[in-house]
Length: 154
Image 1 (cartoon, rainbow, N blue to C red):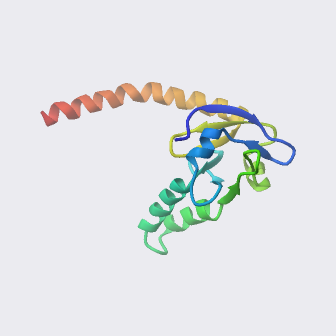
Image 2: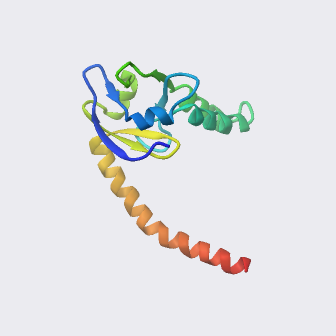
């Protein structure tokens, strides 16, 4: 699993060292990760073969020619870069992804279980605060909904 949040500095060649645990979590048929523009946020999303297979499965469930399928194919598959590890455990982010999300110096690498995201440090700080507030407000409502479902099932 991809866990934790770390800050890393991109070097002048847009290389970043991902944690050793991320390299283990991404293990698959090739030595690296898949990265693409996230659909849900203004950041780079990445993961290993399992993440690629998940997105491919979602896309394959939609009929050929479906507008959502086309949008997902364009956004995910068309935006995807397959990035291999160098001997030091670094990946080199494509210039296009760095420009798209303002990744120039310090970045936040955020583990999300089956995937990770790479944010500009400043953008992630704001996003983390919004997500924290949403979780704080949403958790009590979710618990109430779960209690109600248990009561109805009993």
